[in-house]
Length: 392
Ligand SMILES: *Cc1c(COP(=O)(O)O)cnc(C)c1O
Image (cartoon, rainbow, N blue to C red; front, side, top):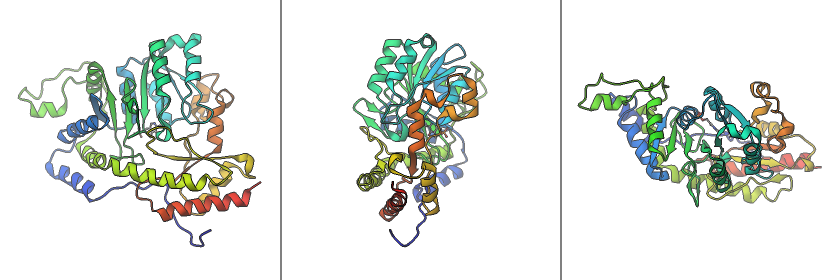
C-alpha cells in the first residue's frame, strides 16, 4: 500500500480553453439562446452517430418525455423498462400518464433481460405496452438484437436511454440509432457535457417534427426561424400544449467542442478501465464489470463477491471514501423508493432478484478522462488493502 494518501474525485469534467472560448464567443455575439450553435450541434451530432435526425434539448429527462410523447406513450398505455436505472427513465412515462412495467436485469450483467421483457409482453398486461425502454447501463449496450425482435413480434416501439452510452457502437450502429429513438444526456458527469443538456435521435421525420414543436411550446416555428426568415416573425401557430425544453446556444457551443473531443475522452476512459480490469482481475473478491461490444465505459461498476468478504458493500464503500477515493452507487433499483413501491403491488425486491443483488454488491469507481495512472493505481491499492483487511 502506498503510504501517501491521495484524493481521487469521483468525477471531474474535462473542460479546456477551447470550451471557454466557445462559450465567451456566444455571450459576446448577443444571441444567447437556441440558434445557430444549436443547429450546428444537431448537425454534427447526427453525423457522428449516423442518425437522420438529432434534436438537442435541455436534458435527457426532457428528451425522454418528448420522445415518448411523440411515439404515442400516453395514459391509455404503458412502457416496459428496467428498475436498474436513474429515476427519470421511468418517471417520464408517468408524466404522460402511462403505466410502467419493470423487467428484471440479466443474471450476469446490468442490462434489461429480453426474457423478462417477453414475459410481460405475453401476459395480459402485454396488450397495454406501447414501448420498451432499454437503458445501456455504464455504456454496455443491451441485447438490442433480441429487443428489436421482440418489438417487431409484439408491435411495440423501442426508446433507448443513452444517458451512459455515448459513443457506444455495435455492429448494428451507434447506441441510440437502433431503436425508434435514442436519448442522450450531457449532464455534468456524463461522457461529454453541456453542464445540462441532451440529444434525441430519431429515424422518422414526423416524429422529429413533433419533438421539434413540442420542445418549444408546441409552436410550429422555431425561435431562430422567426428571427431569420423573411416571413413575419410574429406569425406562428400553436398545435398543442408544448414544453420548454430547448438547449441554449451557450450550452450548445460548449457541446460542440466536447463532441469534437469525444474520441479523446473515449480513448482515455478505455485506458483507465483497462488498467482497473487488469489489476482487479487478480483479486478473488472482485467480479469484473461486463464489457460488451463497443462499450463507452461511462462508469466502472465494481462488483464485490461478498461470499469472500467479512463486510458489507457499504462498509467497503465507506472505507474507500475514508481513504480519499470518491465513489458512487449506480443505481438504487427503483422499487426501493417509496413512490415506486407504493405505486404497484408487485414492486418489491423479491420480484427483481438480479437488480437487487447487483445493487447490493456494486460500487462505482472514479473513471474520467483526465485521471492520472497514479490515481488509478491508488484506487487499486486501496481496494487491495480493504479486501485484505476483510478477507474471509
Ligand atoms: C443521468 C441519467 C438520466 C438523466 O439525464 P439528465 O440529462 O440529467 O436529465 C437518465 N437516465 C440515466 C440512466 C441517467 O444516468
